[in-house]
Image (tube, rainbow, N blue to C red; front, top):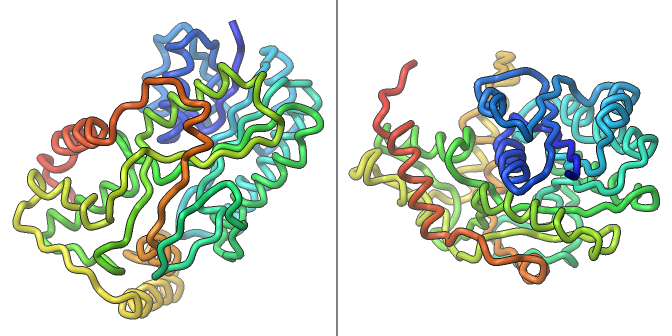
Amino acid sequence: MAKVLVTGANGFAGRSICKVLALHGYQVYALVRKISVHTQLFVNNPRITLLQGDLSSAEALFDLLEKNEIEHVIHSAAVVSDWGPKEIFYEVNVNGTRRLLEASRLAAIKNFLYISTIDVLDYKHGKHTVLSETTPYTSSGHPYQKTKLLGELAAVDSREYFKVVILRPAWLFGPGDKTLIPEIIHNLKQGFLLLPGKKDTYIPLLYVENFAFFVRNVLDRIDGLPSGTKMNLCDDAKITWRQFVTFFKPACNAKAVVVNIPYVLGYVASLLFENYHRLLGIKTRPMITRSSLSMVTSSLEVDSSSMKQHLDNGFLSFEKAMDRTVAWFNINYCLRKEVH
């Protein structure tokens, strides 16, 4: 039974990866910073072993890999946000990744899957961009995009020591999401959602369980993949931000008004919110930031042809994935009164 270490196992993507791998016969070692409600779901699964730790020590990571005879590492731990001190992004996304790579080299693991993001690629707001594996890297200075790029480059540079595969998922969605969809629902329940950008701005989406299924798919056939392989991942659906938001209206607030506003107004608002938070030292993220504005106003499409070459049948259709997602959020968010 192949042994796999999954970092960030209590995250949105990490939880699904652990469950799918365990279901398909892998012995999973789930690395978490702390035992949480989410990781309690793993407790009764004999194929998932919870390991409490972080990425702060290459020596500790080496001991963990060596002691448990880990063969494969799936690195999904990251600081994922459009707001926060840049030092935190660099410490986890860059330094933490480098420590894990060094530990993996010393422990002589076989394969390293780095979970990157399409945000490491270059795109501009106001333009429709089709992202492929040949798309140039981003020149963005935003801490999240920049540090995920540096982490990806560090992983690629380690391909002489073990096989490295880079997976770049589109925007992940599904039951349990705690970022994108809850914010949409909150605004819909208030009756008014301002959506910066044009009405025909497309959002590339990937159902989180489809993503986990593909990770397992790659691990199953990794012997046939060249080291340094990079793949952009996306569901086979073309949908606008406005259409995506509308899926959640009926149960949350059918009368909610969704209004598209020009990029310029969104930029001014994001700048004001950012400065207000900095001036008052507010730790929580602003309602809108320049980084989130860029993402929302960039019309993106992902060329997933490379992914499809390595995909077995089993992906849930976008329609069924949305049905499951909407049903889950209807129960857990839309029908629940918000507490402030």
